Image 1 (cartoon, helix red, strand yellow):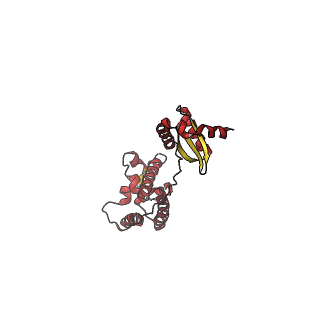
Image 2 (cartoon, helix red, strand yellow):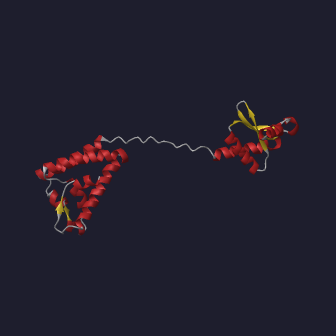
Image 3 (cartoon, helix red, strand yellow):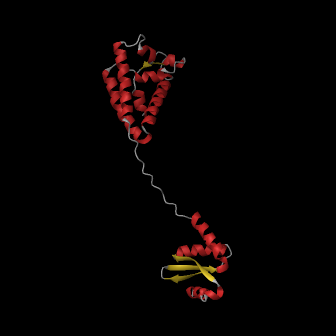
Length: 209
């Protein structure tokens, strides 16, 4: 019955001056359009055609109806979830090589007395001195090693941890974060250790990563 009434509404288009404003509609979309036009005070009707439903409005309303439907379409475009292919950051080998170079250099410096000042004495974590304001020790201690096995462990595990972290954050951020976290760990450790406590090594940074 409803379909018949709709056909009756648009029969004799020349006489009542109705015009098609949308063609090839599916029923849900057509119903949505009718609601929009009705809300704006415009009469409309749909008629089945070979490619779907055709929506008709009075000719005087055609321009306004088309404008309203365009606005409706723009505001209700399907939001397609854009799948961002997270391309893993390619770790930069040169950054890892720099890590090795720094640790090996200071290891050799400690064992071969490259400097007039003892690097261990000048740069190791010393709880009392850090609390007194020598905060840089929290960073310099990360580069110092005495024993070969300690050095090799931090070289290998530090590189692995940093490269894995770099897959998420990028190489620069990964190394910077490890240094900051290692230094912070050294500083925090001084508040739970006696004033005479000392330590060296990159282990704090590796564990923090």
